[in-house]
Amino acid sequence: MSKSGSSNIHGKNMEESSSSTTTIPVAATLSRYESQKRRDWNTFGQYLNNMRPPVPLSQCNSNHVLDFLRYLDQFGKTKVHLQGCMFYGQPEPPAPCTCPLKQAWGSLDALIGRLRAAYEENGGSPDTNPFASGSIRVYLREIRECQAMARGIPYKKKKKVTNVQSKGNDESSSSTIHFC
Image (cartoon, rainbow, N blue to C red; front, side, top):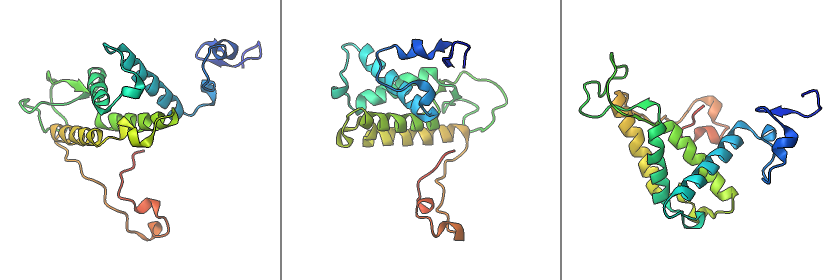
């Protein structure tokens, strides 16, 4: 707390930041996940607003989401070797190359998960959720496989755990992949 009795978030007093017209709770009360989800949702909304012509959220579809994911590649930090690159398929290339930097598959997968949840939390129907579209799942699978091949590390789905500890826990016997 500062001497004036108000807490300080990123250099702003709580009174200053709470005077805005948002209906979202103060950032200090949000978890990291909730903060990321809100930031991602706002970024996607801004992306739609910046399109020419602007796209209202009610008219957003999976093609807009795919375009957004491709747009984000320009800010990526993961080197993805092209098939013609001499380092294609090498997990640790010995020298730099001119292959593009892209968003990592794991980052995109987590982003889609947050946006999918945010869509429904902001009044969207699960039936019309563009982030839950089959084309998004196919795109993410292709990105995962492409990046794994470019690095020379084949992606393998984790097997079901069949030890004694998991027998009483239905959730751990799921075949879905959990990332820390």
